[in-house]
Length: 459
Image (cartoon, rainbow, N blue to C red; front, side, top):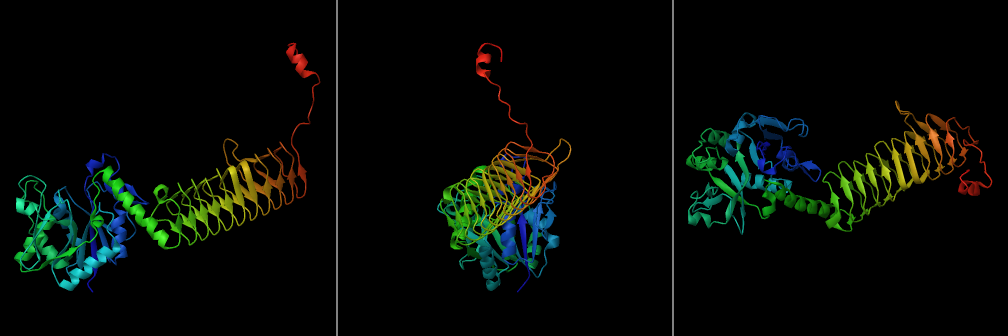
C-alpha cells in the first residue's frame, strides 16, 4: 500500500470567531480544534501529517510531536494552502486533504475514503455529502459515467446556474489524491475567479483533462464534515463531539447518569463500572479506575483516581486518589496531593502538595498544605498546617496513628511522632515526640461577676 500523508488546512484567519485566540486553537472537548483532524489522520494510519499554518506561525508549539508544518504565504485559497505543502508531498504517496476546522471527521471515515480511492485507481477521490439544504456549499457535477466532472462554487450570485443549484450533492472539502497527479495539477491552478484565489477543487478538471479519473466517495453522515466558522458552530460541533465521547464510555461499561449535564474531555480514561453522577466535569489527562463514583457536582482536572474511589461534590486538580479512598463533599484537592489507600479527605477540607497515608483521615474543616502524614492518623476538625512564614514554605511531618484534637494549628516546620496527640485549640510550634501529648495554649481563667460589672460599665 502507498504511504499515506495527511495535509490539514489550518492557515485561515478565523475572523468570524471574534477572538484574540486563533480559531484553530479554540478548545473542543480537551483538544484544540485543529487537533481533532490530526488525531483522526494519525489513527487512520497516516505516515506523515502536514499542517498548513499562516505566516504568523500561530500553531507553533501547539501541535503533537511528529507533526510538521508548511507555511501558506498569503490567504490565497485552499489550492494555495495545499500548494504550500507541495515540498512535503511524495509523488508515490496517497494524500488526504482535510480542513483544520472540521473536527468531527473520524479515523474510520478517512480510512474508508483512502480504501475507496486506492481501490478505484482514481487520481483523485472527493468525499461528498447529500444535504437537504445545500445552501452555501459547492455543488458536485458528475459526468455520464458517474465520475466527478467539477465542483461549482456558490459563494456569490451567478456562480452557478439554477440547474446546478438544484444539485443536492455537495463538496465536503475532504479529498484523497495520488501524490504525483496532485503535484502536477497544483502547478496548473490559476486564480480565475471573483475572489482571486486558488481553489483546490479546480484541480479536478485539470486531472480529467489529463485523462485521469476523478471518483466520488459518499459520506453517509454529514456531521463528519461539519465545519466551524464562528462560536455558534463551535457549540454545535461540541454537542456532537461530547455525545460521541459519552457513547464511547457507555459502551465501555461506564454509567453516565445524566449526559446532558456531564462534560468529559476526549483525553479522559474511565474504567468499567464507574458511575459519573450529574453535573460532573472531567477534564484534561484525568484517569479514573474501576468501580468509582464521581459526583454529583464534581470537577476533576488532570486527576488520577484508582479503584473504588467515592468523590461527591468536590474539586480536584493534579492530584492522585488511591484505592477505596473517599473525598468530599465540598473538598478541594490541589496539585501534588496524594491520598493513599482507604484515606479520607472530608467535608470542607483543602489539601495541597501533601501525602496522606493509608487509612488516614482528614474528616472536616481543615487545611493541609506541604505535609507528610503517616498511616491510620486522624486529624481533628479545623486542623491547620501553617506552612508559610511569609517568605518560604515549610513541611509538616505527622507520623502513624497520630490524633490531633479540634482546632490544632501545626506551625511548620514541625514533626509529630508516631502515636502522638495534641490538645484542643493548640498551636504546636515544637516537635511532639512519639506517644506524647502536645498542648500549646494558655490555661483557662474565669473572671467572676464579669456580666454585672460590664453592665455597670466596669468590666
